[in-house]
Image (cartoon, rainbow, N blue to C red; front, side, top):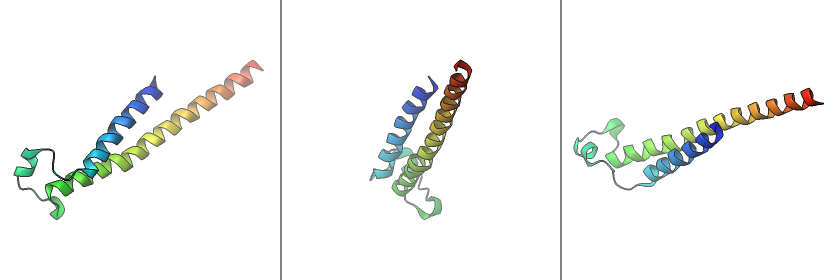
Length: 85
């Protein structure tokens, strides 16, 4: 169940991050109308940067979690094989 949840979360967050990274205009008019310019970025550039952060480092976190689950599975199978044989 944990692996299924991890895959679903990775797909949703990765897709959202990619969509945000490639968007050409800000999705939230309220944010764009505030006139904020963090680090000199336009609202669209700020959104694209946020999408990139969500997509790439977020994907690495999901990959790391998948490796931890895979390691746990392999250790459990090896212990079961030793116990059975």
